[in-house]
Each structure stands twice: as structure tokens, then as C-alpha cells.
Image 1 (tube, rainbow, N blue to C red):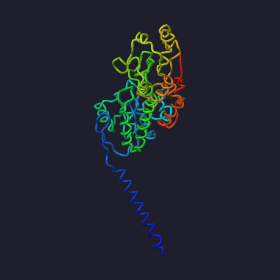
Image 2 (image 1 turned 90 degrees about the vertical axis):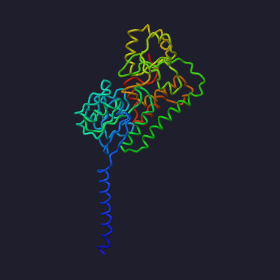
Image 3 (image 1 turned 135 degrees about the vertical axis):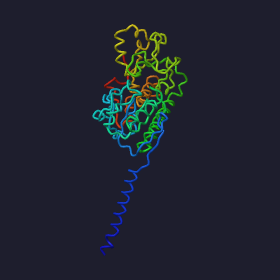
Image 4 (image 1 turned 180 degrees about the horizontal axis):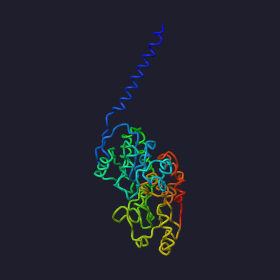
Length: 362
């Protein structure tokens, strides 16, 4: 009887042991994954990837969006100051991680410090804005796979970033539904913004955005020819006819254009405030300043494009230019809703404390 009672348990135990052995061997002996990164390089990666570091503008932001923060084991020094970057406000634990190098605009296409990076014992390094040949050299030096991600052109919103989400998901073996959800989230917001303004027969107001960050903070003369929040709304900036994308305009041209509405990027607000005190007569000749039609937006480009902020700004700009079409939108709540989806928690209040919130200024 005892044999009859216990034999099935031994069979079950043996089967469980075999299953465990199979699962263990399948992990240890998993076939390496070969991917093509956003620099067009073929990179072979041993799976699973449990420890990662991120270097370059916005690399860490993409990993946060993909809910992979628990695997980050080292960050650039500049990531320890969250100012201007909602993902860093939402994840204060980054401050306690080892440093892999200074980071920042001066280190674009250079990569992190090899010794500091290796001390973190990463399985993989995600980088942005690095040429393929330099990524290859860094990979050879580290002996660790280096995968190049991309946002598309610097300081824009480009759907190339969707490919980065998919690549991270494939490498990290995380749920592909997250990458799909991110793509759907951004796509639906673009469609919503378009539909709200599609019925507007003519966009008559002359608009301008100044103080745009580009490898650092700048004043009123720093702008974008193609500012995504304007593009999403079908709004044309007064600088649309100029060449280039990021532009430093001639200040006299701003007087000539005399925009009806001026938006100030929060990252350049302090420089513009100082310039107003130094050159008040210039600003007194701008209709937008005389009529109180100057509005603050959150920093759009801070260690490349703040994607969530880009869309939050678009909704805010919509409430200013087309109040009837956006009468159901509370810009601060909308910003927090966007941050919560992307980061797991709100960050608008942190941004507001650092730069001031949405509203008229000056």
C-alpha cells in the first residue's frame, strides 16, 4: 500500500525536477539573440539581460518608459540631478546608483567611462546619438554588447523612437504589449490633437516659441522651425520659412514678425528674465509682451526631447490658442496623466516647482 501511495509523489517530484532542470538549462544555454540596432549594426546578445547601463541623451528615459528601471545598475552623473527631466523626478533611486561617467551634451558620441562602466558589471549598454563606428569601438573596449537607440533627429518628435521601444522590448524579453501600448498612446494623442483643430478653417494668430534648449539653455532667440506641439495642432510658427530646424534667429526679425502669441520654454526662462531686465525696451516693442500674451511651457528638450512633455505642452498650447476646442482639458491634469502612463507616477508638480507651471508670464 505504501508503494501505491507514495509512488505517484515520487513521479511528480521527479517530473518537477526534470522541468526545473529543463528551465535552468534553457536559460543558461539560451541561444544568443542577434539584433540590428538603430545605427544599423548587428549586435549579438547573451540572454537573459539582467543588468544594464544607459548613456547618451534620453537613453535612460526610453528604458523608464519601457518599465525596465529595476535592471539599471549605473547612470551618468548628470542623471543624478533630475531638473527638467520628469523620468528622473519619478525615479529618485537613480541618485544612489554608481556613476558611469559625466554624461551631458559634451559627451555625445563619446560614451561613458569604460572603467566605471565595467565596475557596474553590465550585461548590456544602451546608448543614443552615437555613430555606429564609435559604438563598435566602445563595444570592443568594454567586451559588452552596445546597442544604439534613437529618437530620430535631435530635439524633435520622430516616430523612429517607436523602433527603439520595440528593440528594447525584444532585448529585455519584456512584454511586447508595453512597446505596443506606448506607440498607441502617442499615436492616439497625435490623432486627438489633430481632430480638435481640424475644423479650424484658418490659423490666424502669429505664434513663436523661444528659449528652446539645444545642447544647453538659451534665450528668446533660440527656437525650432518645426516645433512639434505647433505641428500637432496645425499651427505655423513665424519662423517656418527659415532654413534649418533648430535656429538662432536675429532678434530684429522677431520685432519685424511681432508675433501675437509667444510661448517661452521653461528651460530658457531664467535667461529671458535676465534679458528682460537688461534690455527692457526690446521686449516692450513686442505686442505679445505688451498685451500679456506670453505663456510658459515646460522644458521640451532636456537631454533630448522630453516626449511626454512635448505632448503635455501641445495640449496646453491648444487651450491657449483654441480654448473652445480644448475646453474639456485641464492642462496640469493632462500633463500628470501623461506622466503617470509613461513613468508610473505624476511629475508635473516637480516640473512646476523647478520652472513654474503653465500660464501667462512676464
